[in-house]
Length: 361
Image (cartoon, rainbow, N blue to C red; front, side, top):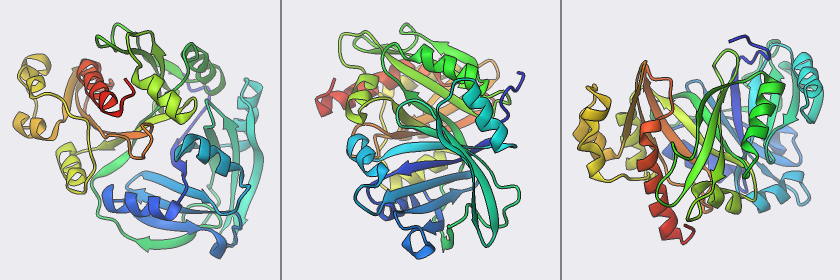
């Protein structure tokens, strides 16, 4: 595809939370991240604190307000802990910001320098759906570890084999999916890779529609979901209600050994959605031969799907906060470029069972 808006990679994902220290501790001890940076009062930042966590190519920041009246305090009260920023590393921040705004984006921060004794980083930001932004940054001339005002930390986690972010999924209101698809096409030059309608993603009770958007170089992938009419309240409706509008529904984490990763997460108390054992009875007929032991996959609840280029394995956590909003996907790609269409029905029935327990179906 022609790349109309060059993006090197997802640089980091920032969550705004009530307690950054507790969130960092949780993700260090369950998801195995290393805590490699800190900012706050001790580094000269007077209104918020945060921690940088890393595992291979994935960087996550947890930030929290320190004072009443911080602009994020009200948003956290409204949304709960949430993904506020999916940041992009770009070649030219000024060009990227000016181009995005000229194409219809709303600026969240004008291009500016952030600096410390290690140099400076050029940054800007634009708004996307809900209260989510895309920071645009370039640190080519910066000699520090991550960003200015971050103090290096050395608090190792016990890695579970996460390699990178595979994709980030956004939930938007009914009738807004095509609007945001067009926004990503027009503003960031993304292309629609795959579309799913309510015939693809439905059960007897609920359904949704989804389109997968990808950057010109294919490195950044954003499925966008909206609810579809159904007999009961869909998972997207539930998310929109408890989050208070559009936002990031889940982040898919890429691994090269899903059995190892999921086994470690389960041992550390992470809860996953489950599927009936009958799902595995016809698995070989549906996806063909695979390398993994099906009994092991069944024991862990890992799903499998195949496309023309290979197969993938995936599993979804239950929500990681008290609200039924943000959760994670663990995905292992063995050639497949798709998103597990063959698993949608089993997955949605599993989510509906959880909704029924919560009384929100």
